[in-house]
Image (cartoon, rainbow, N blue to C red; front, side, top):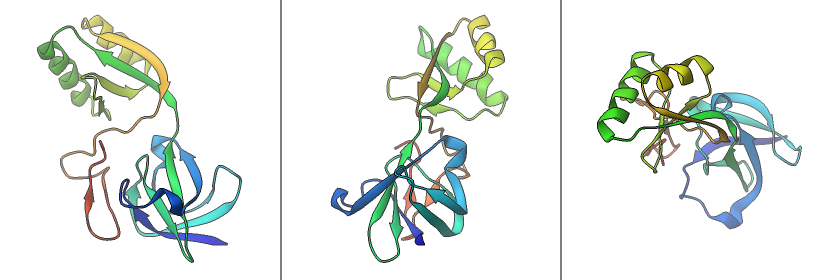
Length: 160
């Protein structure tokens, strides 16, 4: 059976090394040891020293050569926006006060896992909510709880 024992951070490995992909939702990307199937149906063992949060574009280095690329699955999410930056900051505070995982979008908005109660709360606070299917990669937190250290010891920004 194929075995992957190292994570290669996105951007640190060459595309010609890729021998497959594995598509995983956010909650399925925090792993240490598990039997997985790549997107073509081939089994492999993820066998890491420590649990890490895999991000879209990371590579799983296979013993004997080759890399399986991690792909973030489309998930049911809510994209949140506001007219003014200060209003968005207040909405972010309310999300943080509920200890929700939040992704900061390059567009200036926020993304959370879909929750109809939270969506109603945000709309009640005057925010805009768009339900959609998209990859979800929330911030890692101040203590790196959701980030990962690649096997070479380099910290990887989970918002990358």
